[in-house]
Length: 206
Image (cartoon, rainbow, N blue to C red; front, side, top):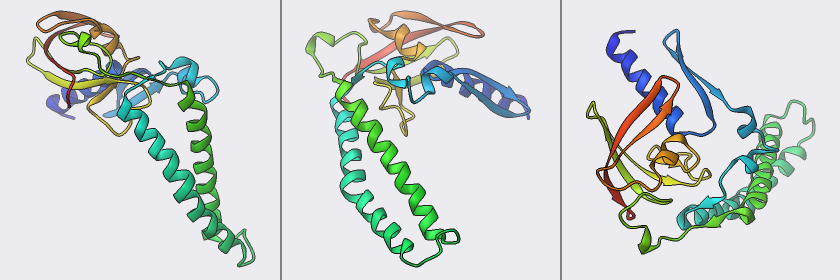
């Protein structure tokens, strides 16, 4: 692996560490990224205790839509397929039955999680008092001494998946940013030492 690619990998590794609270350690081993997860924060039994129970209004709506889609549309659809496949006879060699039965269990697991998690969430609405400083829900643009620029939104831990421009309020980067204003500098502790960043822009609209 050449030097440029290696440096790019190192940047990716560090950004994962800074923005994903469940990432305990990231390493580059034999040209591949190795990620060590915090087993406590990833455990289904204790994960909710390790998370901040904050969420944006749109994030909550997305979870509600996911729940309704799974329960009222996807689950009945998959249940019909399972019942049909089961009626064909030998289930041990029935690929349709095996696959959709597994899918049904995954749907039920996700629905149980959402029903347990959503009542604990606190929806945070934007307040004009937040303007000018970094708080929950803010879009932030930052820059370091190397001229590297990042733009992201600080949201709840349930909102960061499938969005590369969202970071968790529980992450080291977000924690260091809270309360900062434009042109302020701040440092973030990393395994390689402290990293210095500057706040370029703060916005509360997409």
